[in-house]
Image 1 (spheres, protein in one colour):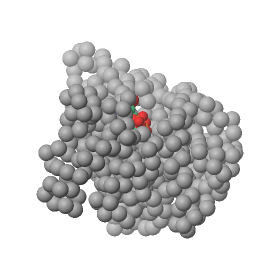
Image 2 (tube, protein in one colour; image 1 turned 180 degrees about the vertical axis):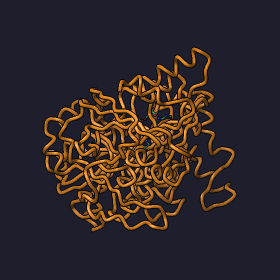
Image 3 (spheres, protein in one colour; image 1 turned 90 degrees about the vertical axis):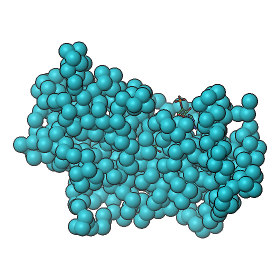
Image 4 (tube, helix red, strand yellow; image 1 turned 90 degrees about the horizontal axis):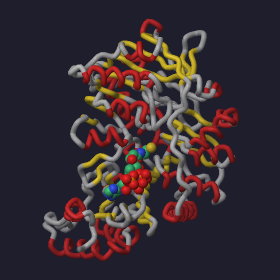
Length: 490
Ligand code: COA
């Protein structure tokens, strides 16, 4: 069927679940055709919006187009599209920011209501009707199971060598019938390579031939290299003290340039025999797989630059042996993250002096992207590390603040904070000890004395002295930025 005709199956008010995870494996044609129909309906004065569920972020062809025609009523669970972000922050789109590992089970529990249609990109359909997944798996198994009808996009641009790379686990159950997930090593295969869909559910099959959106990574800058250096020194220190094996523990690395740089530096530092149990596989991990530094990598999505995608497609047979793409409910499963003992490395918007981390909200109110999988890993990891530059917006914002303006990861879930200034190892420290360490090691020199002054006065004047705060002043840094575009003293 043409994308236009397939999109006509989607009617106003429907809940539509689409494939796609960090710009990989999203439908390329039906969303655009749907956006055109929505725009035409609006021009006629008709109301036409849909509730849109995905695996995670998608691309301008999906989130961007549907947001630009005001076609999205509700969106979950993670996004990073600039147009959609503006609509959410203007209060025009309802956005539910949900842990990546929770989405499939919540949909199965019925928390999001009925799913009318799933639109899923696959890289092929086998003669027996099984579906060869694409460059991400995300929630596709659950969307196909829960949706009343399924539109498939078969993307012939995706490399045929993807066949056999996926591991789709079909043994999950609703409580109280759940059993342990039999995965003991990141490289284990516990399911089969294909998705299944009852033929009677298929509403349309649309052919496409288009690449995934892919953004180039910037070359690691001095800040990223310094952050990577601090973290790698710390990992070596942990090996020397017997708290980590020389091959480390399964790595989880969040999205972004800094985490990409940290993984790249690990490769240069002579580490070997590593594994990754992560959500997204970025260029640097692909390189470590190719170089034999990484023995195995488990993820739910490939988020590669154009050059990375080309390397992947050209050497796919080599990667396929050691790279496994799984449903996001498994790639991010808390039971597995805890049992495997992951080393979690994620970016942040800001952290406060006590180690509470804000991953999502600029000035406590504007959503940036979403929590993604950071919470799945942070709470359950062997070592939970958060990394960022110590300032933002040309040094006008300190990313170390007295009180986080929004908290995604509480002090209880944060073991290590790293900025280019240094690394604060917060394990086993009381709140006041944590504050001293974070100010000393992570704050930018331009803001360090301001933080120290706040903390000293809080220690004297706070209502309670366990986690000292000056409640009238705790969020004044953010208020100052909102009012005069800088957290610096006038
Ligand atoms: N105040 C205001 N703006 C801030 C800020 C702060 N404290 N911290 C960052 N920003 C802005 C930056 O200026 C930048 O804006 P720009 O694009 O207009 O230049 C943007 O936020 C991204 O920040 P950056 O420093 O480039 O960091 P990043 O690309 O590493 O992203 C997060 C940081 C927190 C946004 C990102 O890691 C994220 O979305 N995390 C949540 C999801 C997650 O952790 N997933 C991991 C599992 S895969």
